[in-house]
Amino acid sequence: MTHELVIRDGNLVDGLGGEPVPGDLAVDAGIITEVGKVDTKGKRELDAQGLTVTPGFIDMHTHLDAQICWDPHVSPVSRHGVTTALIGNCGVTFAPCRPEDRELLAGMMETVEDIPRQSILAGLPWDWVHYGDYLDSVERLGPGINIAGMIGHGALRYFVMGERGVEEDATDEEKHEMARLVGEAIDRGAVGFSSNRYRGHRIPDGRAVPGTLAELDELVLIGNEVAKRDALYQHVGMRFDHVDHVVDATGARMLFNSTLQGFDDDAGKKRLEAIRKVAEGRDLSGVAQVRGSGALIGLQALVPGAGETWAKLRRMELEAKLKAIRDPEFRTRLIAEAQEPKGWARPGWMYYLGNGVSPDHTQGSHNNLAAMAEAAGEHWSETFLRLSDETNGTALFNHVGENQNLKALRDLFAGGVFPGVGDAGAHVGMVMDAGWATFVLSHWIRENGLYTMGQGIQRLTSGPARILGLKDRGALQAGMRADINVFDADTVAEAHPYRVADFPAGAERLTQGSIGYKATLVNGEFHVIDGELTDACAGQVLRHHLALHD
Image 1 (spheres, helix red, strand yellow):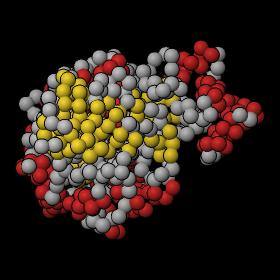
Image 2 (image 1 turned 60 degrees about the vertical axis):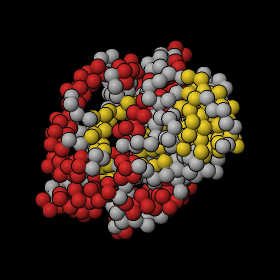
Image 3 (image 1 turned 180 degrees about the vertical axis):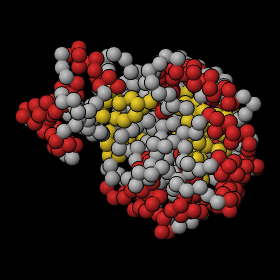
Image 4 (image 1 turned 135 degrees about the horizontal axis):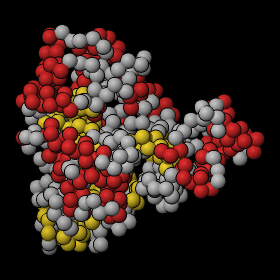
C-alpha cells in the first residue's frame, strides 16, 4: 500500500501534552493513518527534518461569521496554523434573522465588532433564516478551514421579541421560545450558545446589545437546553456570581473571557483565585488574549491626536498623510495641538512595535512611547511623527488597554486559563491579534518558557478540542482528522501588520503574514505551503451532533 502523503523525519508533538519525538506521519483520505516509523512510501512526501509537526491549532474566539462568507481562507488566521475556528462569540451572530432585520444585525456587528456594515450587507448571501440554515450556507460556500458555530443571544432575542428584545424583559412564552430555538440550532449543528453581558457593547443607537440585560432565569432556561445536549455555553462580561447561578442551575459547560485590566503584578493571581472559587466541581474554561491588546496606532491604523489638524490628517490616504507630516508647517501644527490639554493619547500605554522582522510586543521601557520620547527629549507626538516619517508610514504602536502587565498574564496562563481571543474577523481597522497562536509559539514557548513545547501545543489543540466537543481533532493519532502544522520552532513568528482593501464594498482592514510555517494541512489537504495560501478549500462545518456521535 502506498500512502497519499508521508510527512517524514519531523519532531512530532502529539497535542496531548507529550514532548517532541522524532518520527513520520502518514495521511490517507484526510485521516492520519500511521504515526511513528512509516516504512511505506507516499505518493507525496514532505521532508520535515528539523521541523516541528503538530495538530492544527483551534481558535476558540473569532468573529469570522461574516468573512467566511466571502473569504474561504479567512486570512490571516490560516497563515498562523489555525485549522478550526469557533464563530458566534459574544452573543452577536447573523442568525436567526428575518430579511427585514438584516440591516440591524449588520449594524450591531459593526458597532460591537468593528466589521464594516457595507461589507456585511454586500458580502453575505443572506440565504438563511434560522441558525442551522446559516451553517448550511457556510457549508455550501466551501470553507478553507473548519468552522464551528454558536447561536448568539443578540440575534436570537431580536428574532423572538423584535424591538422589545433590546431593553425589555421577555415574557415566559418568549423565554421558552428562545430556549427552544437554541435547542433546535444545536440539533442542527451549532456547538453551543453565546451571550453577552458586557455593557460596553452597543447597537448603533447606543443601547446595549440585546441580551445584556436579560433576566437570569432566561439564561437558565436556555442553559438547560445547552446542557442537556452537552453543548457549550459561552459568555463575555458576566459577573462571577451570575456564572455561579447559571452553571449551578443548569450544569452547562461554560467558556468565558478572562482578560486582565491594570498594571498590578498580582492581577493574574487575584483573577485565578476568583475563577477557582466558581469553577470548583464545574466544567468552566477561561480564555484570554495572549499579550497586551487594545488598538494599533499609526498612519495605516488609528491616527492619534485631537484637534483640527489631526482630524484633517486622519481623513487622508496614506501617501497624503506622509506628504502632510513631512510638511514643516503642517507638522508644527500637529505637535502644537498634541501639546494642548485635550491633546489625546496616553503615551505611557503605547508601545512601538519596532521595525524588525517581527513586531515587538514585549512592553518594556525600550519601546514605550512616553519613555522613548523622554529619552529623545521630545514630546510624544514628535516621536510618533518622526518614526512614522522614517518608516514611510508603516510604524505602528500598540495602545494597550488590556493585559497591561505581562507578568500577571503569565500567572493567569500558568494557572490554567487558555491563550486565545485573537478576535479574528473583528475590529478589523484597529486590532491585529489574529496571529495569537504564533505568538504563543514564539513568546510563551520559545522566549519566555512559560510552556514546554508539549504543554503549549496541548493548549492550542486537544485542550480547545475538548471544550468544543470535537472528538476527532486535536491530536496526532491514527484515526484522527489530518489537521496538521509543520513549522520551524526556532524561527516561527508573526510578520508586521499592514493595511489592505480587500473586503466587499472596498472596505479596508489590517492583516499580517507569518514566518516559519512550512505547511498547514486541513483535512489532509495543503492549505498553506511556505507561509502562502493554496487554492485548497477542504474545511468542514463541524456540527455538534456529528462531533458527538462520529
